[in-house]
Length: 313
Image 1 (cartoon, rainbow, N blue to C red):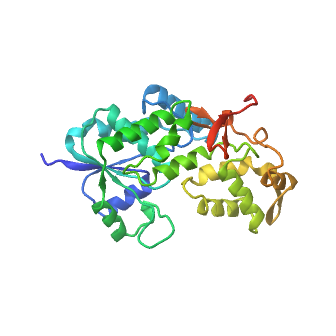
Image 2: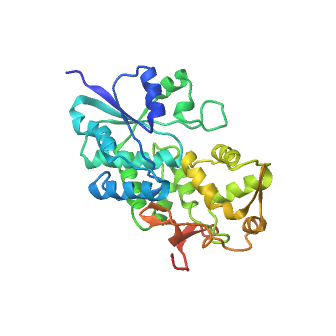
Image 3: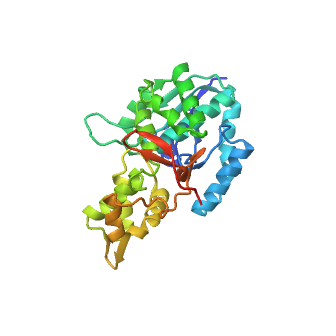
């Protein structure tokens, strides 16, 4: 029997593109956003599934259909059909956390096939970072031809990062930021992750502060308008509408909303000036892997996370 590649994509948009291009092989579509919510190391163990289901229900009012996910993941139980596994993941944090979970799952299943990575980001002379689905067909096929085979060291690194992410001490990611690997954008993503915790000065994280800056410096007409701007100017996060909309809602305490405009209120200006720590006023109950966002703050001077002094409620 001729063996074929197994492609793992980060979502159905890219799966559809690969189908249109008639790329040889089977496709496993990964439908998760593990950069938010609780995780444990054993990917899609019973405990993992329960945690994810509860998270999506509590935070986004979404009923996660675990059977559908497991049906898709079942392709990994038939590795004898495949010659190699090709991971299609992008430059951002959203993709990278999913990617390290997929690599860890492949290791947990003891699948010994060659692992390749197709990752987009900077394309030719274009300054802007591009997602895989944004590439034209020629660029996408070129990326596929130029795919990188992951070394045992790369795979160990991914598994280590996943273990730390699911654990209690995310400062352990700091030495990995300066580690060389085939994951060209991993260090940017890990830096961006640490900056998702509230900063000691104002209690805002990088994304929240960015949203307030946009409201301050642009003429924003509505929350939908603000969503568009934030999606475009989010750097290495790769968040979707769902996540950004939730963040904007949580920041409403800083806005003065009128019929055709959103401006900063007094509190919003105070937050940007760092006159007060607002961590207690913003709902910070989000989990990132094994850590609650509320329990740590990012100290910019020391460039690390420190335990928060107030108690989480």
